Image (cartoon, rainbow, N blue to C red; front, side, top):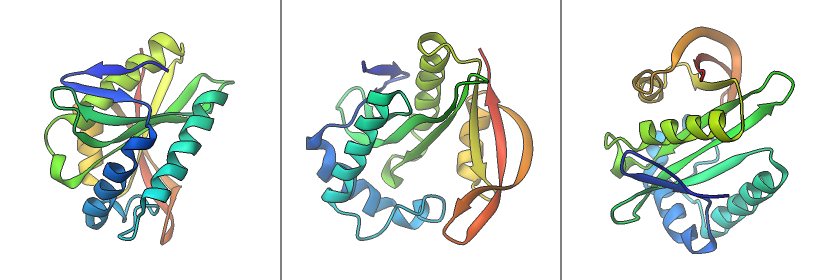
Length: 176
């Protein structure tokens, strides 16, 4: 898979040498990330990162997911992850997700990732819809969806499962 670029950021598939930086970013961000992403733990290891990278590569190979590292284009500093997943081939849509490390908040990385991934979904994958699903209470992620131009559609009950169990989630959509 090729690289994607948007607004000063580069999205590319993970490589083995990203593992230490990825694991450090997860550990740095556990306080804000873990409530929304149960895989984010304070003891996240390089091996955990490598396992995730292998899962991402398999998803890309099968066409079931396209997960990327998000890097600043100028210095290639790792700032987070973003991807397209949960494809519905019958109706031509997928989910778009993102996370940004704590030290890179409010620098435009998430909105850049959304722009690049939406362009890829519509232009390359020929999808007709992209959904951003945000757990109720995740105000930062809702802000990214709004700033990215996504349309708010509804609050869906028991839409996502977090560590505390099923919770409602806001559904935003992007269309070509």
